[in-house]
Image (cartoon, rainbow, N blue to C red):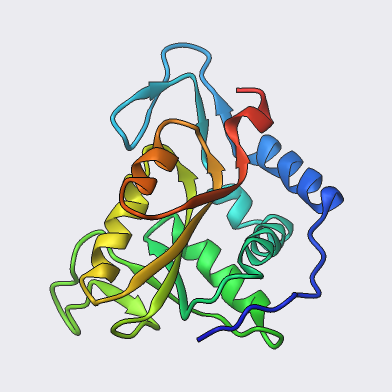
Length: 193
């Protein structure tokens, strides 16, 4: 089990402000007309496409530092989430956690693999483990709930979930109803949307 520790990677107001600026520049899209279709089925005048931020060296580094700051006092065994949004987050956090507090990661496939190992969960996980889940953007919490279902089927307990951005569209409430507390580095309100 990963014990609680105080990571020496500072994540304060300056780092948070810089990450907010990167997300606003690279990942916040506003619709000129109509709107964006969301995974939840809703339509919105704004959209967070976090892939450009998560695949930017500074953005990925700052997201990982923010996630590590949210995990610094939690005890858990593995960190993971649903593909595709969680993969770059898990990879960045796992890499940055070394050597001070090595964190092992995994991801849950949207569908079970039909060849080879036929796994639904890829990476590092074991039966009965304590899990922290991550996702890029939380809207209704559907992605996190799908990941939670897969790891709970392996007898695992979910300690918490962390999103980079919470759209404030029901994810916190939906996850809480399933016993999963949700934290976020930012909410949509931080971006004025």
